[in-house]
Length: 443
Image (cartoon, rainbow, N blue to C red):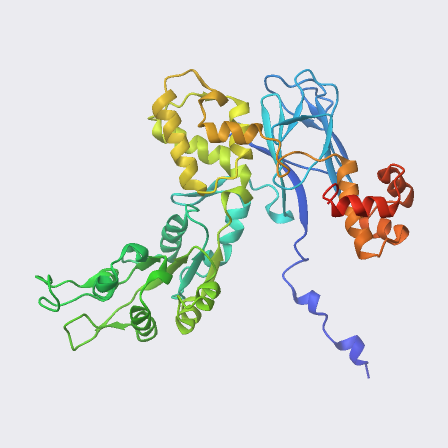
């Protein structure tokens, strides 16, 4: 008789495939010539046919730079180019690269990203009608796309301007529901009218109700109701919303009879519903009932390689289909900016440039609003590229704290040799380095 060890099915054999593995790539973000290159080993970059990554363009030397991977460290090194190598707007000889860093070689702009192997080649596409994005956004909406034809409620979480309503329209299109998609901004609803707007009312139900109204729920019959900032609904209305979702029936104000509804609800929040529940702004039972599928939409600063393509699309739209040429240094500044108002802010900048400078032959960095010009020229710690020594020192200091000052164990934990650790210390003792770190000299 075979042993249980021989007959037990291996769980990984039943999986759909190997575990998804991340890889680090550099995405070249010229909308006319997009491409993706994986960073493995040492790769020369330039115009020469002999370069591992061959890129044509103004200001690019034949052998311009080298991108490399050494263990878990990624970096770029200038190879004596005429016009220099830039990381996050700063000219460098050699610098480490992290996901989100922006690299410019002449007129070529690239964004470093860590992505799943299966999405490595995905750059920018129309994910759904009117919804554009790259691998990060495609991954974020992949689960809701698979479940779109079900009647599960959907929760969209993301900061202002990230495109929650566009995603709601995408879900509605994927669902193939025959009814309309109606959007309601719950934050703009007067508290006294919230129930009436959602569920309808009979004439005379309250002061000012001079006619019947079917309300948003019944108006969206057979379709989708998008509730933006649903956490701003009054508690009494949240209770009735919960009942409407559970029973699929609504009762208008002034009526005694309920009406059947077939509506898919999509609720949007700027933060996690759990946070709103903890603050007492959202009913816990409603939060649980809404969360059939939860989608967390990444802000624009976490998908920087989307910025040039979105900007190009907005600029073309607001220029009547004939946009001016865009200088690579302007593209670099757009990519480095953090976009606190996300896609909405980017579209406003594109529209502003189209209105003010749409007849210029080329858009230059000086045409940007001052906040974008100044941010790109700043030397703050968030954008200044670090040298390998700085990075090794940071990791070593962290490891020294955790190991109680044991240099051998700290070097091993930091992923460097003991000899490298001594070179990084530059003749200082462990105690001196830790004291400097406490004073803020090394983090």
